[in-house]
Length: 101
Image (cartoon, rainbow, N blue to C red; front, side, top):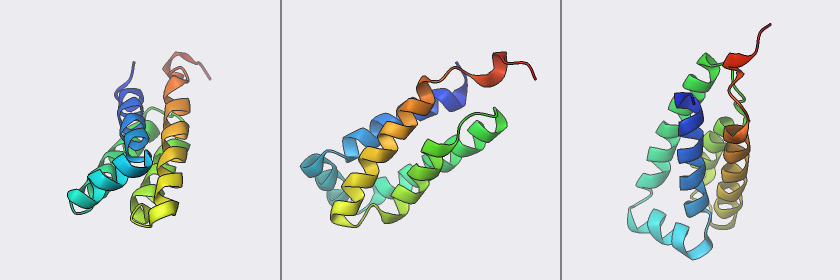
């Protein structure tokens, strides 16, 4: 399993936690929106590794957008849930390394 695929599982799990309405909002607000900045960094790292591995980057791009708009109450919750779904779907796909062109 590639590093990008592992990071997709990790970031997808974090996004799922942040997508839980009261739990996610409590975490984000109590830590002064720091989780959004940390998730932005993780999503950028995941995107770079995914591009290097020629993998699907939809979830990481959506995660970057989510980190930028996650501070908006209902939009943030929806985006966190969508990001989690797309990241985990991308992570569930097999690595493209085994494919030959």
